[in-house]
Length: 103
Image (cartoon, rainbow, N blue to C red; front, side):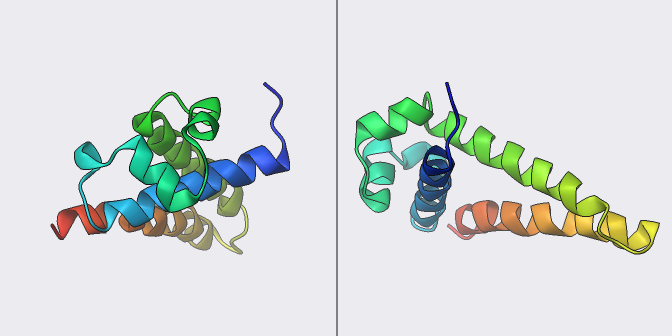
């Protein structure tokens, strides 16, 4: 499958919709129907990109980790590089986890 900018954008939009859904319900209770309604796409679009909601979550975590490694070399020192590496993914992870923990 060829990855296009539009395809990537759709995946990020679905991930954002999932995060919004997680503010009101735990992952186990969220349905694909709720995700696509929050995103404004069809179920067909969802399943064209992901097998299920857990595949979406795994894809998003993979993206966060890849981005964190890209930022690692941006620091002027080893310390700054490590701070960049670990701060950005944890802030994204907190966006996913905090709504669930507050329930």
